[in-house]
Amino acid sequence: MNIEILCIGNLKETWLHDAAGEYAKRLRPYAQLSVTELKETRLPANASAADEEAVRRKEGGALLAALPLAGGGKDAHNVKSGATASLFVIALDRRGEALTSEGFAERLEALTARGKSRICFLIGGSLGLSEAALSRADQRLSFSAFTFPHQLMRVILLEQIYRAFKIQRGEPYHK
Image (tube, rainbow, N blue to C red):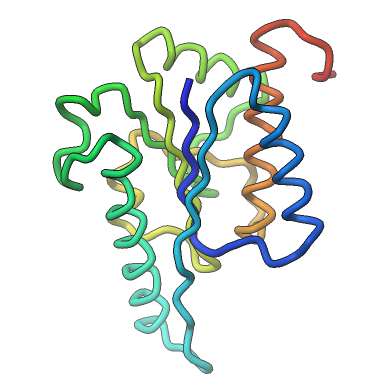
């Protein structure tokens, strides 16, 4: 399985970088992982709602533009067809579907059984994902009703993907 994470911003804190690196290393026996960090758009001081929406749209556009690379080179409007039929896009959104760790493991396994060998996760910036990015997703997934920093969310996602593979194989780790 290929796991691709498209995310806005990079990991600025050493401890987040180290944690993400540790889970990436642990995932190597189970999946091929790629993480693409896209530029975060600066929000003006005293930003209006319109300014915030403009930032979400710009970052969402960057995520959508990166999807063809994740999906095999098709244009952004046609990424569900042809050679990209194996691609499944999951947007992380606190309003999305909440799963248990076991449910997440079952979902990944079911996607693989359906021929979805490329799973691409979208992580927005500090303001979340644009409506265009959310609309492109095949699924919206919530890890909590809480709001998390997007850099920390990447570490949480990597840990849950690792946990899912351990659950699928009945290996020790998940309690």
